[in-house]
Amino acid sequence: MSVITKNGPKIRSTEKSKEFKLKNIEIFKDVKSKYESILNDNNVSYYKMGPLTGSNYYKYMDLETALICLENKSLRFAEPSLWQDNYESRFYNANYNKILNGKDETRVCPLIYSTCLTGKKNNEAAWKIYSYGKVGLGARCVELTLSRFELRRELISFLKNYSIYEGLVSYVWEGDVDRMHKKRILNNKTFENNPWYDLFFRHFDKKEYLNLMLLKRDAFEHEQETRIMLVPDTPTMAKGKKHVKNGKTIYGGHIDVKIDWGKIIKEVRYSDSCTEVEIKLLKDAVRKAVGFVGDDAAWEKDRRCPHCYYIYGKRERIMIK
Figure 1 (cartoon, rainbow, N blue to C red):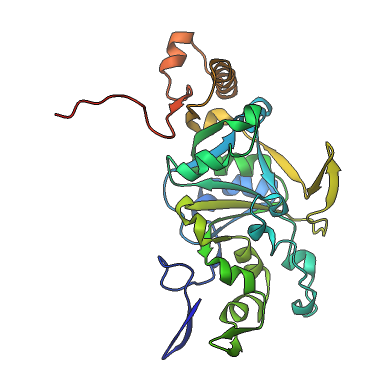
Figure 2: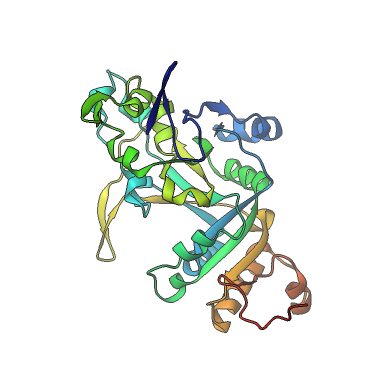
């Protein structure tokens, strides 16, 4: 939605945002100053898009995925074409031929692997969405509290020949997402230039493309999501490739980045729907992944030892004083 002012059109993303602006791509100075030698050795560049503050990230997974990641000591990054919300992948799979103006598409619109995080603890939507419509272990949700600084270090330590982009998600009205790619739109029975199109596609380049990868419908604004996107330095156009896996049609692929969970996990919680067997599986997996040394009693007291989170609150009778 745009608002015409004396200085021209302003684009509002949501009711909480007065004006939408593209995020600049900047070298992440804090990462470079701390880990410059690792970045150089592994040929990795680390960028940020927008302000990034805070010491923790919260990663939500279904229990099955969590057990696999903990066992393999890895974190999964998936192509946007595999994201559950089709609105988020529409620009990843788009045809940009008409606006590239001779630019190399593999560099302007590269293949991306991404993981989603949030700076918001007890994210109710995340607790529910990661178990909705699933069965078995996939119907349980796990929340991992991660150190942002150690996560970044782990990524640049195990990746080679990648560019990393870390940025906050921008939330926009669903109707604007629907028509963002159109040059002219109907407004009060009159066709006019689309300010969204002008912003993203008039001078289309990698900055605009990566900003498109940070768009999400305003219905999810409460998630306060951040995305870390990995772009291989070797250009390829094998984006969103269609294939069949276990009888299901899949669009795109993923990579599992090796990490040392013991360095980044600060706390683990599981949903109150977990059974005793599932809780034991998770506790054993986390204990092994973080390399805890000590007896069972000491482990139960450790902050990283998984404990329960009551999604809908504890059902107990309280005394009003």
